[in-house]
Amino acid sequence: MKHTELKNLLLLFLTAMIWGAAFVAQSAGMDYVGPFTFLSARSFLGGIFLLPCIRFLDKLNTVDNTPRKADCRSNRKQLLLGGSCAGLVLMLASSLQQIGILYTTVGKAGFLTAMYVIIVPFLGVFLLHQKLEKRIWVCVLLAVCGMALLCLNGSARLQLGDALELLCALAFSIHILVLDHFTSKVDPVRLSCIQFFVCGIFSAIPMLLLEHPTIHVLLAAWLPIAYAGILSSGVAYTLQAIAQKKCDPTLASLVMCLESVFSAVFGWLILHQALSLREGIGCILMFAAIVLANLPGKKHDTAISQNQKTYQHKERKNI
Image (cartoon, rainbow, N blue to C red; front, side, top):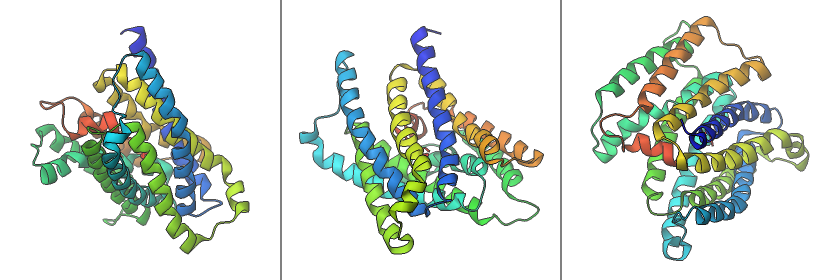
């Protein structure tokens, strides 16, 4: 492995670690503020942080003689449309994730959110008429078995938090397809910056109607908000954009899979949310499904592989 590729893989490993720890920040932040307040604040911070990052990446790509899709005058309409659509879906997905964390552990939230990797190919079949590979059915079987062990505690019903995280995964899958459509036409970093601001604006509406935050509680929650907004949304996304330029996409996607693992590790280390043996086995099965879904198949350029080039959780996570 070349030194440059190893360095980029380490950057992606750091990105996955940052995104995994963001689940802890999201949980800790709601000790002080409501979910919509947290989401709005972190989204605005992420958008503000990406503004100078756009200039930095422009200069970096100029040095590398890499053409940028940054002609904002000719692409402004597509950029605004894409950023608005992505921001609205991101707001829905992130709200479900943020509220779900109130009722479940961050480890479960991380693995359940990562199920978007399995859902995206099915959406591709129904919405884009793409062919579904056989290995995806194996991924589904592993994921369903893993979720049963992770979430069903002697009952056939999902807990509220787990159900919200699964809905969040569905919403993030739609978000990925929206990004996949628009990032072929406009600069993805600029698109991401706009979607953060759109997400922040629309999250502020239920925030003002339902939560009525004060400066005092925002200052009390400054550390988790800053982590989620600056490190998770801004720094990690920029690291991903830099590292994936010169990194094998298969290796990159496999490293990024570790986000869900880190969410469970940091939930245990910081919040003392330990998983039982049964839940741990469920996580292993789900992680195996995620890894298998990220391996290249017959059609390497499907929506799922495009996701590795364009998606930020992140959001998703997490974004």
